[in-house]
Amino acid sequence: MKLLMDADCLIKLTKAGLKEMVAETNALLIPAVVKREVVDTGKNKGCADAFIVEENIAAQKITVVESTTIISTG
Image 1 (cartoon, helix red, strand yellow):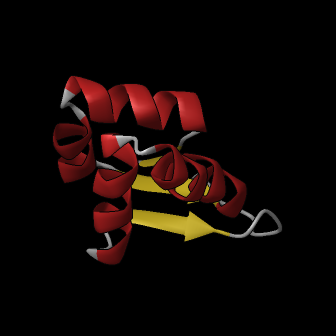
Image 2 (cartoon, rainbow, N blue to C red; image 1 turned 135 degrees about the vertical axis):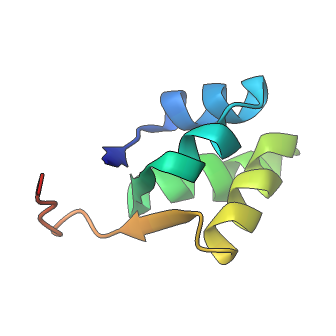
């Protein structure tokens, strides 16, 4: 299943240590604006979860999509 996440959901799953479990059985997608909010702004604030999410994006566990991308439910 494809899961499109907002910043709040992504941060809470990461802090709870549940993101890896969810990512094992689902495709995690975040809009580019969420990446900027969680990773870029979070790193500037020194938030540990921002570095974890950045590593997950680099490892292709989380996919960043442009806001104009249409995500099918199929």
